[in-house]
Length: 419
Image 1 (cartoon, one colour):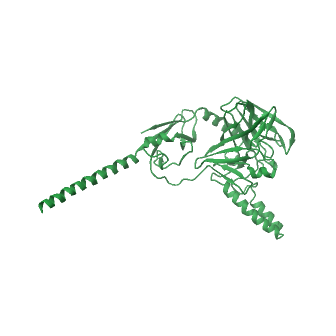
Image 2: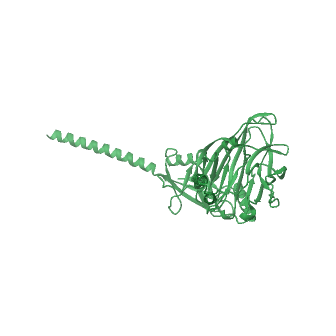
Image 3: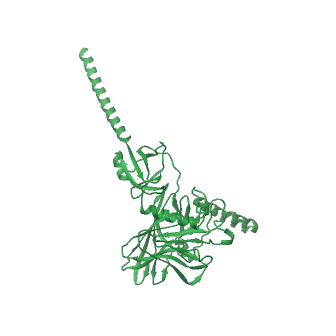
């Protein structure tokens, strides 16, 4: 009996030791998962900064001792959760607001974050002749797709849609138009012309129903910020994209690659244009990187925007930017301007007005920055737009936005990761 009891006690002690070992392992595992690191964003400039900051995500996960891509928590100095995004190119994005010559430190740890509102997204709207439209909290943009090209309509460049609210609105605009089209068609079939006209007017993309509108006139032009090759003084207008792929889709950054139809240019066959476009929350400017497959020799390259005949005087040409107060598609009716710009911070460019040799559709010409692109070279620049209801009251303020953005590019926020 005693031996049996001793055996039971011995087994119990072994069991307790095993349980203790398991508990210790679990505690160490939890401690490892609960590890916290600090990410400090430093502003070395003399101006207030608020922008999306890119952090090496693999370094963050290595410091946290967590599997890459697992959920994490980002807390600000007040202990509140901050929205973040992991990108396709292994960056951790956070939105930082840092005073001049100041810093802001975030605590980062493992954990499941709450759901955050998205402020930067893009989607295909196939029913609308393959429109691909993307937006952030300030502005929206549209690229024309293959279904439009098949119709023969000559619309080449990037389109601008205006927004007066920070929430995402593009999907709702398309939904309203799609449903209104069906209702309008039914009413016209019934001979109810007045009611059909009312439905069309109350849901038109070209009228402001409370969150902005589409009143930028693209047509057979570069629109706003479209890249193009040139032959002499002639712009080779790129047609609609052939295919696309979304790399990142919110909540803080949208990024997609657009691939265009093969072209024959100056004896060079099957030249294929690629555009990598990204837009961050809080930014008036898209970043775009352009390159060409099968480009065999140096070629003239440009980007810019259309100058409309209704206003040929508000163009501003800088050493590394072009900007303009576009008159909209109906200046008298709208009574405001659309401020557009293309910025060239990384390449020497010649900025100039290139008049249209055959003015049509109200197009007086293009403001461009031109340079030479080499085979296999990638060129990065920025383009964007704003208006009074998105915070740009006038063209002078637009110039201030340009100057501030270029200054920020020249002096990026610094990031330091510590335990």
